[in-house]
Image (cartoon, rainbow, N blue to C red; front, side, top):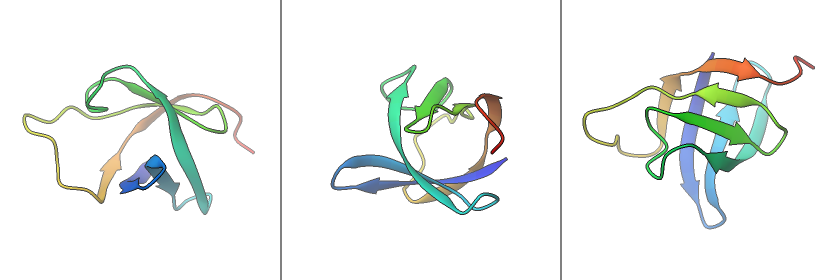
Length: 71
């Protein structure tokens, strides 16, 4: 699923265009976000792609959804 990650004053935010949702990144497996999982504020968990060097934000990536309701 494509998601856009951007930096906001409150922290990292994910925009899920397929669902038209803007959600905060509530928890992440790795400090740099990339290459691990990220849990959004609604409970969805995504496997984030790995990068050799962190991309410049905002960035749109293809992330695999690991868990959470489809609603």
